[in-house]
Image (cartoon, rainbow, N blue to C red):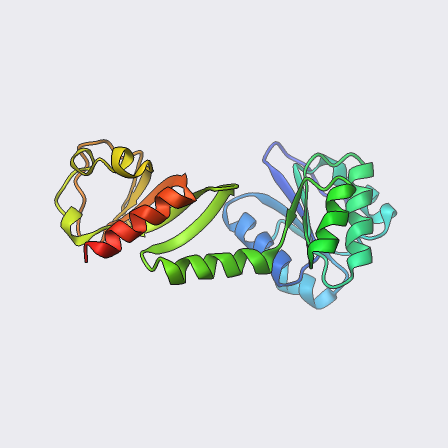
Length: 229
């Protein structure tokens, strides 16, 4: 098997090309990172070949496969194996035993997740739960377009501005003092991006604010926007 050539750029290995694994591989590759995609299915590897640095057909549940890939030299290993929970656990265990520093694994249920955590997986992900939470957040707070929890209780979110905020600057609005959120980025209707906006930055109609703060504070800001309409 051809070995993956390692460079100084941050590198990821995604093991399992189901929908979750495919989308992670594609996103990382589009962000400019080097990504190794591995799956036993020829068709899945063919599909992902245009969205990865290397795409290899192999059985990652075999220790010899992981050794030949020098899996321990990747910055992050993402285990996204389908419904074969035994293969998922064995692959995660082998990765940790081989010295992988950061292993992320998809769990199908709570019991699977607990087993992954017990064998040392650094981050267990429940994709369906994450999507459900995101959809529920958007249903409850229609002004929040995108929401991503960074750590428990704290998030980054995109929020539509209130109409009455148009032509006012951030200092006047005092969002940090009033709602305890930080405005990180302003996205303009013409796709202009303003990072770390200063206090004298004037908001324009249809601006979107990318804010960071506690979930409760972001929700309060969203309700304030809705109440002002």
